[in-house]
Image (cartoon, rainbow, N blue to C red; front, side, top):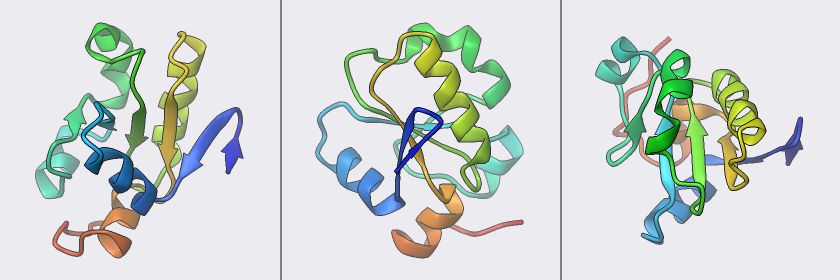
Length: 111
């Protein structure tokens, strides 16, 4: 699905991309306290309000799957990245909550 010019993928699609080991980056834009409660192994963590100052750490030639708790903040970050010239950006619909429900039940859910 395409929302506001950003392609959204479900957690299972994000996992399949990441598992291909082709350089796909899972970008976690949640706050530090959220990451302490639950995280996806191998994801890069840059809080939403810090992404703009860490653009050099993100690949322009690889897929970036952005996620947060439920998908709202990550959509905003994905839009920001698209505006800054990152073309291969995806928003993970449902966020880490959806990941926990459909991909890995060992990732704790939180409110």
